[in-house]
Length: 220
Image 1: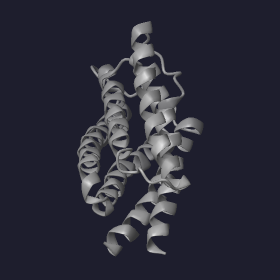
Image 2: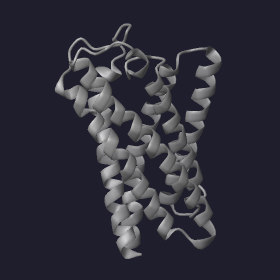
Image 3: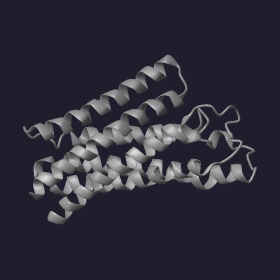
């Protein structure tokens, strides 16, 4: 149990760090997030940062799975059903987004470098209604579902657990609400992708910090 708590503490810190790097590089450097690539949504040049942005994104998914697994291990017996559901949803999230980003890193960008861009449009992350953008959005919806399930674990009366629980609930509400609003308004899926990424990146940074405090309290 102690080793799981220590691992959870490390995973919480790493989750916050990887999220901050992914979010920061995506906003301030990568072409994938600037929304300025016209049809057929293929970059004219590839910069190192266009590769670098996907590294923390790929690492973040399994790190979050480890974090939720550690929460599951230390959850009270009567709450383990919620943490088990969260762990299951997190595995779906990790499978989708890891495959999504790995394809971007090893297929799309090398194809652009090789000038082999025919038929690449639907698989480009720069396509506002492309396959990879849609899969990414689905993956993060599963992440929000995992966080919602975890809200059933953090039912303690102390301020830290209440804060964690409310973040889980608010993140899910904002994600589902924005999906409904954007879909009903008829906007391309990229609008939801940007929205859910922004919501979840902020949430993961906050949760990484709060959960590290949660595990540290258990160790003390």
